Length: 380
Image 1 (spheres, rainbow, N blue to C red):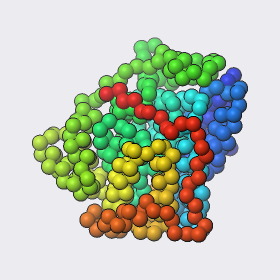
Image 2 (cartoon, one colour):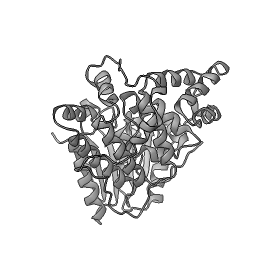
Image 3 (cartoon, one colour):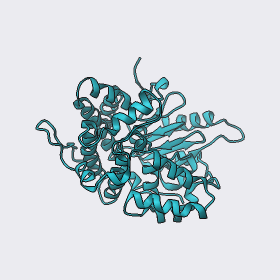
Image 4 (cartoon, rainbow, N blue to C red):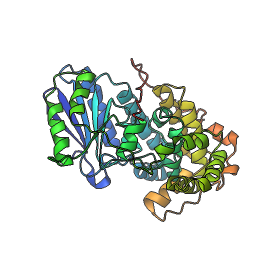
């Protein structure tokens, strides 16, 4: 059974992630297939528009990191390096792609799923969409070029999303700029009907003009309103806390705010940060901060260095412990080393950003492209 289904309609190509039982977790095979398709379609004048969607109830729950961990345990970290090298190259091609890509984000969009969609031109969300970058709970960090797009969200909202792993709904994604359109059911049509009407319209286009494509999606779009308890309504508190220099200061300032504000999001942010890997949170904060002034290619190159250090277990084995606790044994009780933030020293954090000391290792090599990444437009 093919893990990616490809449909051709006129000048439109639709790529369907086809591992519904695994919530379309990105395998090495899927990444290779996407790379092949994206590269071929960019050269092909007979292709003007790409649609990307997931089969079943999820768009894509992330990269198949469980498979990566198993292969590292059985073999070597080189398989993982190869997996991430291809994945990051795909993220880069999508972020700098010359033809419009419309991603239909139904259900779960996390980690690697964000990498194959958020970097593209149009991101359509629905009532069922749930977005998160949950890597710090796994002993990893928001990779796939996330330091590029998280750092470009309003204020310090990206630090909040990247460090706590909070789940965002469709209205929040649209408001902060992660999504470009929202499609919902209406009086006449169910959500599925409206999405298939949108798809049918997109399959009839004969243009790569983003304004024309946007016009078509606009016809099916609505404007959702933020829930009362959304943390985006408290951006001034998020900015005050998540602009702090260190993770320790961020937690301290959240705890200081908590008694004054009866909001659930503060308590759950503190709780998530108390449970996450201390090392992961520290390297994530630094990564997002560095991403603010970098191109998408520079972000991916830096993240590739970081992920190679993580997989080698050079300075911490938290990634293996997180995957064990959450994906493999599922006891949800990881034992992080070091266990406390104050034990993760700056000089160790610094090492994650350096070249890997291995004669066979190379920096991520990205082909020259015309673009440096997309601008995100918040609808706040």
